[in-house]
Image (cartoon, rainbow over all chains, first blue to last red; front, top):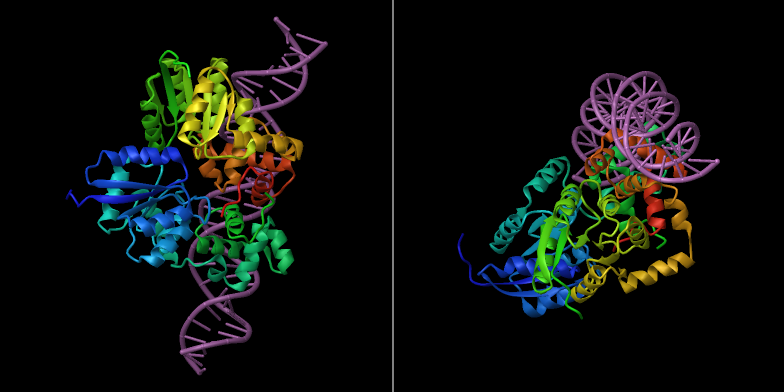
Length: 219
Length: 219
DNA sequence: TTTCGCTCGGGAAGGTTTCCCAACATTTCG
DNA sequence: CGAAATGTTGGGAAACCTTCCCGAGCGAAA
């Protein structure tokens, strides 16, 4: 373990307690000079610009613009930004999106403090780090296809129609009837779509639809 | 602020970093004698019994039996248990169910350390505490629609847990693993739940969850 | 015109859901 | 108290659905 010159770190998480936990962990490292905290997208970006931290540790579920958008915004300004994502989500799609947005590392909140420091070390040295359990999941998927634009871009017109109907709650049969196709064809499409979007259950399709504003939510 | 005799606290959260954050916060209070940590339902209950803490601080999303079930189990053994729920969820339904299960307080992870200490104080004195912003939401909902109740009150505690996990996008297997039940049991539950709620697809369950404010719409 | 990607669906294997049932625990109530 | 109702867990069997692999048609680029 080489001791780098002292680092400044921007810590982005909307949970005060998590920031504290981090503070505690990082406080006992002697390579860290300064910890800057942000609790939403806007202040995260502002502080990145004004403070120029060496490393960013960021939660994905942020109030405001959201974590991914913040990553993109930071990377757009500084292509060399070192961002370690620290999320509750362990689904491949989140990792894929985060990395594609420009993050250099991804770990989950349930991982051990040691692993967290390991990730931090890697990212600060400009290496990439993905939590091993997650990396495996991701890799398996990446052999099937490599993409990650918006849903509309990834899917063909027909696939998108099927996606919409399924995300609205239609069964395979109902969707087939609606599109004058056999249920078999729909089932095939749905498998394909789930594969493309990196999810495994139908419900996750609905979530994607909600989160992209394709389906409106009433609350 | 009166200084109570020194308290022992059982801290239940599956994220190591959150436990650290708590440790840091509580460590600087002189009224606290001892912090016991648990990262799942089983050890939480076991430690409650063996250590007899004065206060329990608990996350709701626990691997194993789940937070609500753990609260119920503890309260059943000790009707006087002082449990403060500390959750990421700010949807009224979560608060309602937690309080109904026997919690004495409810705050979210995004609230300030000061508020957290305030809640801790209240609960340790056997008062009830609900984060003000949430209390308001809860009240408003109680005036508006009892729709949420009609939907979720049709389900038993266990059914509701299964419903939540499935609505969040978990597969039958994943849900089973999460609750330490066989996939078969989950499949049976899901059929039952769909029947009770009058829907036919899993995606419709997710829609119900969204429309009741049980699932938040992100971005 | 050859190649490519999209659309559509068959087949087989394997997995999931449904519905029915049983055991056991807990709660309720006369 | 003891009977009845309800809740929790899962087995069994049949029906059903998904996945993956394949091929055929079709229209648009190259």
